[in-house]
Image 1 (cartoon, helix red, strand yellow):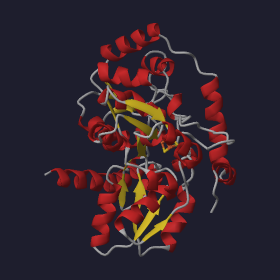
Image 2: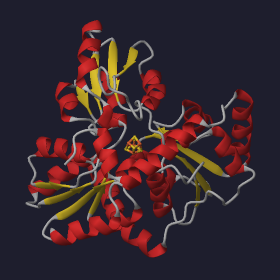
Image 3: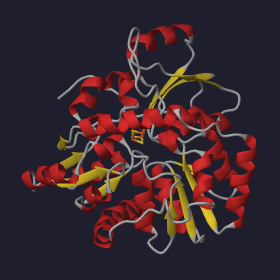
Image 4: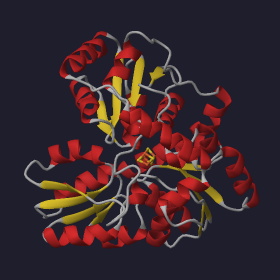
Length: 354
Ligand code: SF4
């Protein structure tokens, strides 16, 4: 097992290649302006299209989703909202597994993304060929995979979970006496294991964004802001999680910012979340958690390079020049197999509500 992001990336050549390309893409991206915003908004409203956006995409896309009847949310709510939408077309502003999930849940809809190149280091770090062998070698375990995986990996799973529901599902399985095989994020896996005490065998992958958060500079920052609460996503290193005032999915962190009494927060997740979090707590100050610590250099710097590929200019091209070019397609048999664990998660969520 490797300990640093560089080692991790170096050990996974496909992650490194994709990350370099994404960082280049970020440098070369067109600056989105107000006029462009207006054109995209008009194009969206003139078509039977719903825009579902993740908290981590650019705030302009989040605003656009809000102003055109779409949603800004975490991956679970994005999937549910998209499936319940009556629109013929869905545009998913996020990363590829979110587009795939939307298509699997809504096969009758046209699902587009601003770019099909936006992937995720967790998805890249869990190729189906190796994962299939891991499952075969541990066939006595219930396979639970994070939503940040390909349709092929989901198709191999018994359960799919998002970070907002993972603890509840694993706890339920543990109480039924089931042993778990978990993939792909090792930090989230360890966190769930600690919270539930479940017997979990972990796949070894990580998020290149959250893995970069470090305690070194955080301690100095906390001395400067002694009243600040620390909000941490569970894909972050254990040392961050153990210091946190709240640990949770994006939606849970926003809820914590509202319910905790602190006047300010240090936030350890992608900085795209600041747009909705600040709306939820307009009177509170939000501070970015430091990455890598003193002397270190960050790769993602708390900004997912793949989420950043979602740009207004690309969205406009999908709506005008490129109809069909960025359409998400999933092999029918794979979609059918992946739908079972996805539906299991949605039914579990529903049973919690009723
Ligand atoms: S922030 Fe991390 S987990 Fe989320 S899409 Fe980017 S690389 Fe994947």
